[in-house]
Image (cartoon, rainbow, N blue to C red; front, side, top):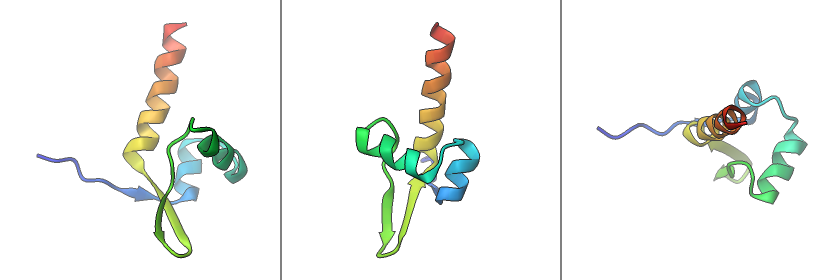
Length: 65
């Protein structure tokens, strides 16, 4: 069974990752944060699975130290 993908908006991303919109943009540009997906001319979102994987990677890095 395939996992269903879910798009989340910036406000939902910020509930998970307490960064400002500007900080998220900077991290995306550096390639250290999941990239947004353009859904329309004026709408972007992120895949919840990619955000969750990013969070898990941070936790794994913390636990290795």
